[in-house]
Image (tube, rainbow, N blue to C red; front, side, top):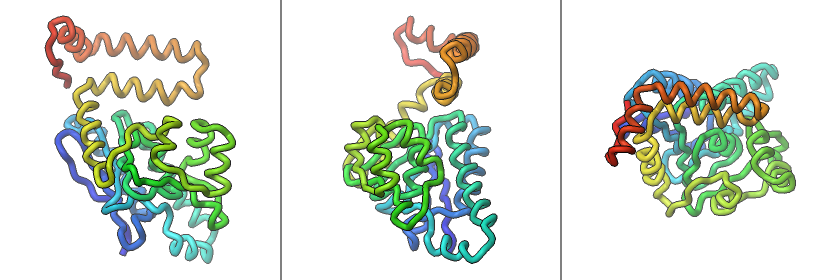
Length: 259
C-alpha cells in the first residue's frame, strides 16, 4: 500500500503525519505531492498559523523506500530524477513557506527523513531519537538538501562523519550543535511541538513571515543587501495593523491580539 500524508489540525496548527507504517514511514512521490498541496492550501488559510510535520507511531521517517528505489533501477534514469525533483519541491516549499514549520521527531529520522527535518524551522525530538544520513550505507549520495544543511551547520569533520561514514547521531548531540531546538521524553515530541507552536501562533504572522524570509536570505545576501532588506521589512511591519497592536499592548501592559 502506498504511503500517505495525513492532515489534521489542532487549534491554529496544521499537523501533517507521514503514514507508511509497512515501510517505516518511508517517503515517496505521493507524499511529496500531498505535502506541497497541504502547504499551498494552508498558506492561504489565515486560521492556520503554524505547521508540524511528524511520523505515525514511534518512528519519524526511514527515508526512501529501498524496494521502490531498486525497482527504479530498471527504469530510465529520468524516472528517479523526477521522483527526487518531487522531494526537492517539497523541501523548497517548506523552506519558503511563510509560516513556522516544526518537525516532531520520534524514533529515527533517516536519509531523506533527516533531510526533511533539516528543512524545518524548528526541530523537537524525543530523547531516544536518532538521526542518520544512511545513504552511503547503500552506496548512494544524499538528496533533500541534507548535504547543504549539514555542511553549513556543522564542522566539516562532523558533517563528513555523518554523510560519508553514515554514523548515527543523537538528538542531544544535535541540540548541542544547534540543529535540534528541544529534546523531550520519548512519546512527547508532538506534545512539545504543539506547545512550541502555541507560542508561535500567539505572535504576529506577518512579523514571523518577515523573520523567516530574512533568515533564509541571510545566507546569500551581503551585509548591505541584508540591511536594506531589514529596513524594508521593518517599515512594512511597523505600518501593519499588528505593529500598532503590538506596541500598544506592550505600553498598556496587556496581551496583544494579532490577526
